[in-house]
Structure formats: C-alpha cells, structure tokens
Image 1 (cartoon, rainbow, N blue to C red):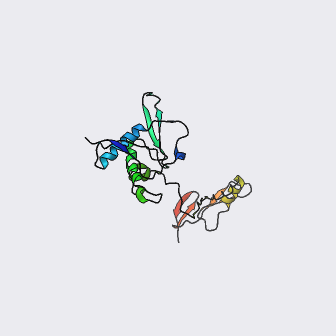
Image 2: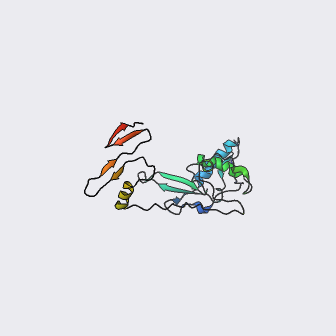
Image 3: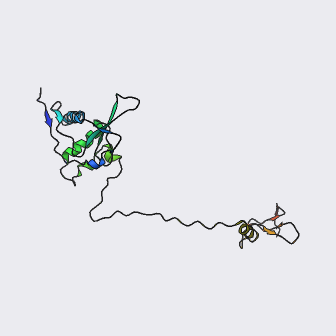
Length: 200
C-alpha cells in the first residue's frame, strides 16, 4: 500500500476574491473539495491513492453553500473565484484545476485549451490588451417624423403626389364628394368604384 501524502498546489491561480458572493450564500469548509481534488488528481496522473488531500484551494477560490428551502438537510455548494463561472461540483472544477496546476505565469497559455465550463461557456474574461481602451458604442435613435393632424391628412388625400396611381376626391360647393377615374399601371380604368378595361 502506497504512503498517502498531501498534494501541494504548485500552479498559479486565476481566482479572485472580488468574484465571491456578497450575500445569499455562506462560507463552507473546503476540506471536501480538497480531498476529492487530490483523489481525482492522483487518478489522472496514474497514482491512485497517492494523495489524501490538497494542501489548499488555489488562491482566490472559496467554497460557499446554500440550504434548500424545501430540503433543509441538503446544501448546494459552489466554488467561487473564477471571473466567468461558479463551479457546482469537484468534477466541474477538476479540468480547470489541472490547467492551474500547470500554470506558471499570468501569460501562460495553460488555460487556452481548458475544456471546463468556465472557459468554454462562460462570459468573456474582463481584460484588455496593454495600451488599449474600452470604447462604448452608443446607438443614435433617429427622430420620429411629426404626426399629421386630421386636416393635414384630408388635404394630402385630396392632393395626391404627381404620378400617384390613386383616385382624387373632387368636391364642389353644395355637392357630395365623388371619385374621378385615374388610369392604373395595367391599363384598367377605375370609374365609380368599378374596374373596366381601358380602350386605346
């Protein structure tokens, strides 16, 4: 039987305390995470049973929990610290943990091919290239055209635009309005509300 030992975290963390929840969840003992992470790491490196626990969580990471309202004995635990995602289990965090163990500097590309949910489905990281500035693009709304009054609408209807293919309303003092026929584009003539074929 192999001698069990504590697995030291030797990488560079990407965790940040500013990503911890400020309300709604309470801090939890991280021992369950450290034990399971050490066990998974031992299996992944071909050393089953070699490590009993991790010496500490990566810097900036902490475990938080919340009791379910309908199940007071059940606690949902989340690992916070990543700026994209709160990990819901050891198995979710483990692929990211492996990359962190290999990371040696902030510019290290160990996280570029990380398959965890934080790196593949999370929101873009809050960072910018040196010497660049964040530019906000503001949408300019076009002003709405002024609304016409009822009298303006009646005037526009009685005086169509030149070339408009619509009947004009002709009125004379003391008479009811009537329609005057205008030719349509297909040669038909509208007269008195009915269509008749135009004659050449």
